[in-house]
Image (cartoon, rainbow, N blue to C red; front, top):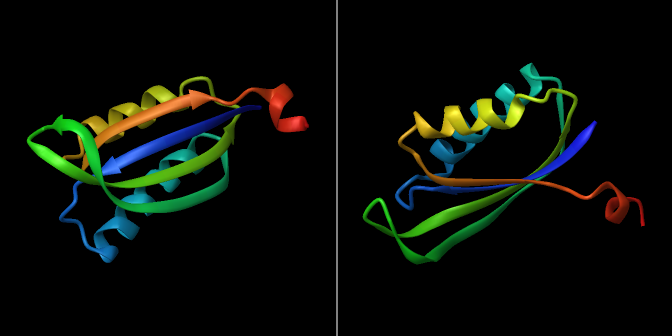
Length: 101
């Protein structure tokens, strides 16, 4: 299984309930694609380094998961692209050697 780290940036006007609903959708997508979520944490509202989609701040959320599916990242990107509540997503592979130490 490959491990991933994903940073989501949500629109700043989302309330707690909307954030939980959006995260539930994303987590369901991951589980449907043979993924196991290890950690999920909200980092709160922060200023963006530069304006994105006319937004100057966003709600950051970090998630770590493992997946056997090779297409999970593309499906996650597509789901976030069609959802206007997500400003940006950044997904990276985690180094297995570093995780073991």
